[in-house]
Image (cartoon, rainbow, N blue to C red):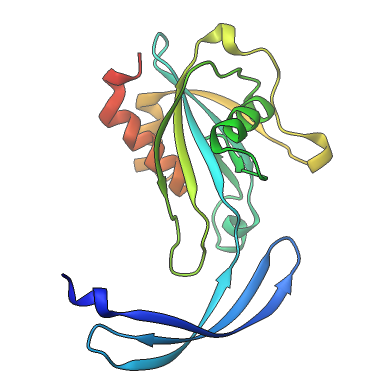
Length: 197
């Protein structure tokens, strides 16, 4: 048994700070640490909803399908605001696989046949409870049955990119791809390329 098994948390209070595009809350908690000492801590949580992302890989052309879209946080941090990513989106109450099939079609125009669940992660567990479900799918040129580009009703403005996997990996090292879920998906592909057939 780990000494951390003795640690426990009691939520004392929660206050909503903002309830716009998503909710931001301030929590007061009593945290009893691994030494048995209790401390009153304050934390702010950004209530981001669960999401899914997918690596679309064409083994014949050795390409991945990525998207480029505007991200305000990158802009505010001084990075180029048009970020290259794997297709992704919120679950919106759907099963993760159903959601990622929908998002792949909306963003890239690709119909997904067989979907492989890879893993799920907390991208920023210190302040965001969002869980991202990672998937992969093998595609070929015949699977592109639409234009993609996102939903006009949601003001999405998405560019579809087809990039050699080796080039995408080089783009990580060059600082051209810096979205966390995309870096993780591409690194997974580099390690597991043989299983993507």
